[in-house]
Image 1: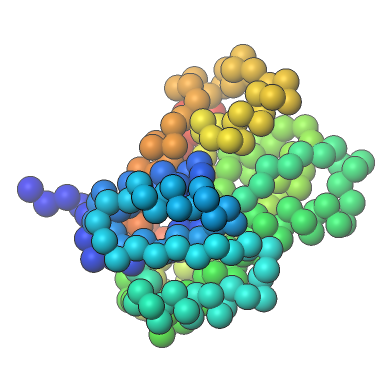
Image 2: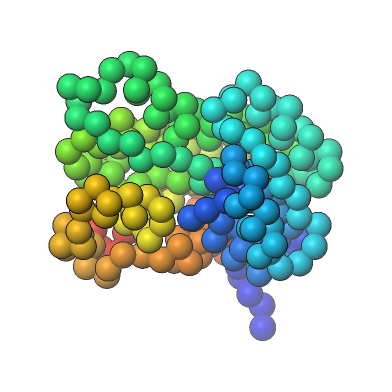
Length: 248
């Protein structure tokens, strides 16, 4: 039986691969046959993700995406060692909340420098004909906060809304090679960020609108792998919402 989500032979770069959605996406993609190049800041946790991958030919790089100036050379090196990319997932991000009265330009720049700027730079580099194969798929991670932000989420919501907006022109610019660019917007997923939410005084009661409950990282990874696979070959310039019903 043909599996439309088969990723066999595809080379996929995943950032934020040491934990949460990025880690599970790498693991799920490896189970679907992909060859992974992983990127994260934490060497020890990144090694744990590498050990959990199935298959062969994977590589990892310890790198802080705040170093935007170094991304071009990093992508070039990964491609030289592991071949042109067939997919990209930028899963690294932060969810720092501050009320507007405390969201000065330095704070806004800090959030965008992690949540938004690296995605644009990675797509710029990976979109190079020398660095990706025709039909490649690039995925940015958005959030329901871009549509329905809570108090103190101004910077975070704006950085995620920026991802939703930028995939549209990117998709048009790269369409001549049938390279697709999409975003996946998630509701609350059981990650370290969710634990931070609980530690800050949040409770499951505040998630009443997400009536399918808190999602698991496997749920998010399945959505991302769908966008990476040929099963979504007619989907580009879009934001796929997977939020347990939150926005409905």
